[in-house]
View 1 (tube, one colour):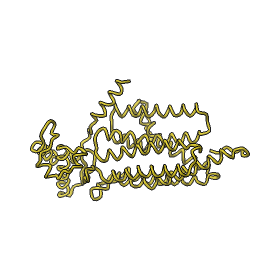
View 2: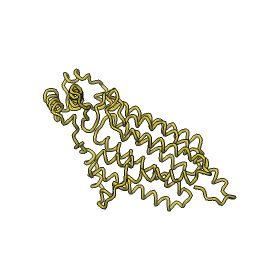
View 3: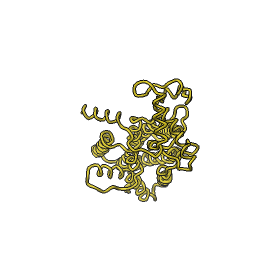
Length: 349
């Protein structure tokens, strides 16, 4: 076990982006970057930064707090020089190391995504307090939705950290935490549907989910780590059919998002006559599907701040209010049914 954990730690700390983009691959950028490091950076690995470069880029105290090194300053400065080079020749805005160019603000690498991630985090905290105020602790699924909120808050914390500074370890924790939200959504759906079954069955189901996520975590830790894989995971764009272990893992990961959505939509159809609040979860998934257009879109940041991903983070804030309204109504209904399930022989779900 210690050997496995050691391998995970080493893998996390040594992850690097391997795919070059048009911007960082261009001669203009490479020439600028190498000259900048040669003349301005000192110390082992070019980490230290000369005073002249500090003055040139106007490096602030917050920049130092967020560990903008000499190498980072050279990358940042040469990035904008290359963007100007491309635009002067009417060429498309290039990406750099798989990312669009963003204006840095207060040391934040992607300020809009940081702001909207914090907005999502605060929304979940606020909505949990609202949930606790309106739902009694003895209601069915009361603790289950607490778990969902805790996982969501964890995911938005790491999203904030990652968009503040993109390091290998923050990238890894952001992606794995984001998928944990997707998987937990499916888990909560399953547990909501079987909430009346015995503890042994629910415990076995829980262990299955834990085992699957553990395998996913190990795969990203010691296997090939790519953003495209996580995109497919989180938005469930299709089902991969193959027999090799890696492709089977991809297939199950993609299915988790699909099953969660289809499960709730099927539930909406089955209970539409006796659970009028089903429209809330239906509205939630319709809005979520519309918001995913932003997540799969890709365009240069507006004002060099607002890219499609940041706007997607913004769109998920109001959507969360719809979801929690449904969770509150559902828990209230389940508690009422538990108290009055003596005369009715109809099995509600």
